[in-house]
Length: 385
Image 1 (cartoon, rainbow, N blue to C red):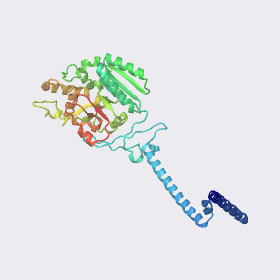
Image 2: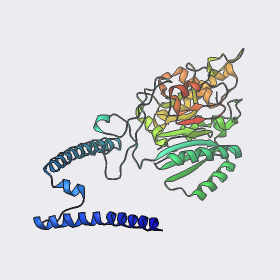
Image 3: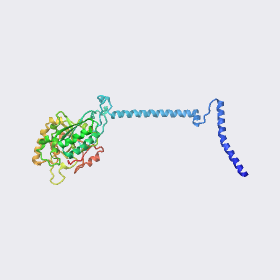
Image 4: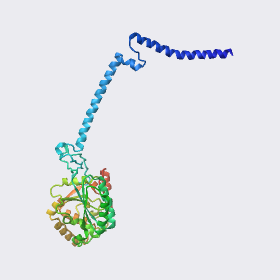
């Protein structure tokens, strides 16, 4: 019993000691502060802040921080200058407050494997680069006939609308079925800054019905040849697309390529990505004449005003009549006739980079384009070879 009492006394004494020591320490420090007439801070950081060593150190850190802040601000100013160039902010190349430009790819028009150097804006360093004004209307022509073509063209139009920033004017050469379907769709969508004009395809049949055609597109596959007559006389240029094209970029980039045409170049085409026109796909294969591998007409840039002045209508008709005497019919519809004309007049064509029409049809060699280019713009899943 005595041992238990002694143990409790020891525990009580130890507890009192632990409680009293911090209290005595605080009283001692407080008394010292009263002697100096200044309060004593119990924080070690506050006590160090009044020491000369700490003051000198903090001054150096502050100066170092100020230097770093100035460096970051300078980097930010440099980045802002670069961004202003990339967004076409140079005052020397703006027309009003609402005018903007898009960056376009650079191409030579001479080779399938040409690369696109993406040049942003219209700055003083890049003054030679073509640009598309924000409010400039882009004209697109499509031949569309029947239920199947209508389904395909809906996919095409949606892909164009998804990426576009400019006003669009669609020129649709359609039969009565396609016109009814597509007119209803566009009225339902109510997409702003989009205009649609229809042209009666049945009225154009007489222009091309004299040409025998083995291609599955039938007579409608020849109607791109008569666009210079069909489209309005005041329309100077147009992008012509097959219904099975799908866009993966802003169509304004393709429209800007018109600015790169030189001299008598009036047709923008991608080289055919198969050996069809080389004539070696099978024994006794006789394709229409073409320049090298020939050109694919799934995507065409047409300078309509110059084509009319060159008497395009007469040019393609004479060529077709001459070749049909030996070939008897076309195998790839309008593409055969376009290539025969280019064979005789190679100066007419501006060769587009392969990524503007990656062809996924039979006998294609589009893997070359996949290997050489990482930024594909459009794909063509049709049957043109």
